[in-house]
Length: 402
Image 1: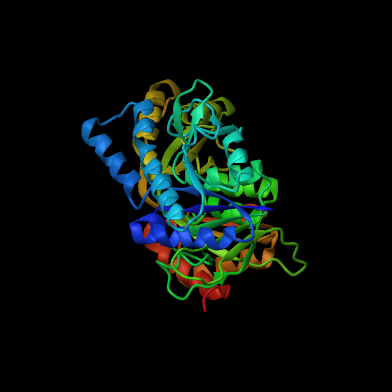
Image 2 (image 1 turned 60 degrees about the vertical axis):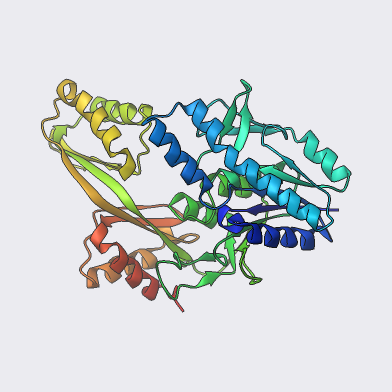
């Protein structure tokens, strides 16, 4: 039989009733397919454990933090296996290390190197349902590791690739992928089908439905992914290959409301200066969303960086170390920056779409701080107060609301 990988998020397993409901969903799929199940920790277990660790230590040791956080998934796999057994289905629970999810040695943000999966293969051969801990693995140094936020999605898609799965089903707390977050923007449309490339761009720009690393694996190995609700039987959204001949159009909008802008006015316009700044920031672990130094004939320019707001203190610390050596005299900071990303195949190079974006926001008197484009997106940086008005106007303009 073909293999289907099923992943349940934490909200889908928040209590015993929901765990039994998840087991019944697996049972229905098992009638016609081999099934591998990947699970997250129940409800907000991971958040509670993380908070507890910081009550003990403001900076927990990364190795011990991984050891702590992986406990949540072990609870989930055991309970779901018990639920399947209660339905007269043979199931067996495994940690990430038990099934050979081998990672690098980067604690709290590990990357999967390979999946050996011998125990999964054996369980499937014996007509059993392997129930696997998401979010975790074991390093090449034989240490327990975690894959970072959204790591269970990554586990599910990596296992799908390793076992050539026919499909991966992601059960979550929404009915599928929408043109914006339905919990924030009422009346947005559910998308029936979306391409791998569009989903990867959507994930990378802040959409919470599927982790970017998982989207990347799906795209690379061409694994069909269905995102659907644990709480209803409604049809979800299928992520797959789509070759459309029609004119490029926006398919969805996503946003981020927690960005930080630091500006350095009047710095020397010299390639070595920019190189040292960018190298120091990236080597320090900063995730640069955008940087710009202006185009001018003058010997000095204004240099700006946009990063995640949570990295504000990290950025300030790095730049302050460079101020004396590089002659930085002033620093301007803004921690009220937001990002609106419009996603769709080919829209970044479509003049009509770009003109409509600017005209729509201009009519609403919304000032744009910076813009970047790619073949799949138009990304607009603006002050946070303009975030919701901008999104509402763009949803209306591009008919992304019911």
